Length: 307
Ligand code: CP
Ligand code: NVA
Image (tube, rainbow, N blue to C red; front, side, top):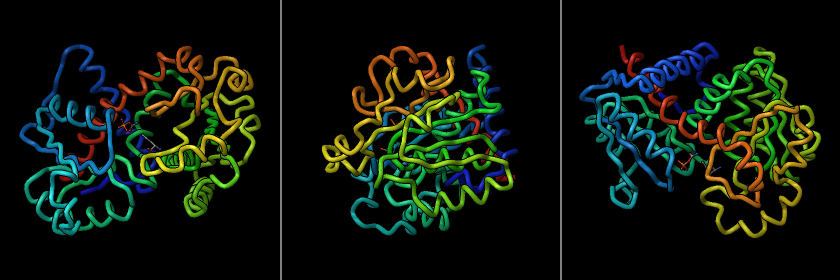
């Protein structure tokens, strides 16, 4: 049995296999074919933070695969009132076939997984958002930009940056990360990624100049400046991130047909301009839709690992 907590635990071949399953499922769905690969199975979805895409994609995906998803907000279950993580894990995993968790500290999901009888999927923690990167990579494949990709991530050193680091380090592409001073990526995650990059051939560079990062990039991406849980810092961050908005002047520095990705939700006029959101809307909303297909691929793959 395998869990899906970070991409660090997966080989390049496994990541590509999950994407391939997801793409095949997407093709079937577009042809009106629904294979009930998870018939009678239940996915428990524990949310300690808000969500639009993650909730809708997992719930819809599980239904389309013939199973059922349970939405469990921490406001409604005893976890939010102090029932220990290990007890919650033992109980839920004795009844459900898979668990997806969106929470704050990454250690919570690790603890949950260590007591779980069934696969646990990270639906976002403060440290990582790996299911988003499955959808992002699927989108790169569909747009034919996965080979020799030079990805520029502009903005906050956060869970998305850490996840891009792991994807690049595993798959072996070039990733440049530009953050303002004081908002750099986690040093331990960077060290892990640099060490993995030695095996995969990935080129990883961190800097404080967004223009340098974007220069000749084939893919430009960003994320909110204030993640969930950082609402109180928002005003300060808007000041500190001055000059980090991805707008047309910034995109002009990338390659002529460079793609723009955003995990969403996007804050127009902050990390990205309205104009860039409009001109790249086709790929951005395909990326969002791919959450559904990539996660169906993941759930089918995890189910197969149970043997
Ligand atoms: N990108 C993403 O995870 O979106 P939600 O927060 O809406 O789930
Ligand atoms: N970094 C963001 C990602 C949202 C999908 C957050 O954690 O809020």
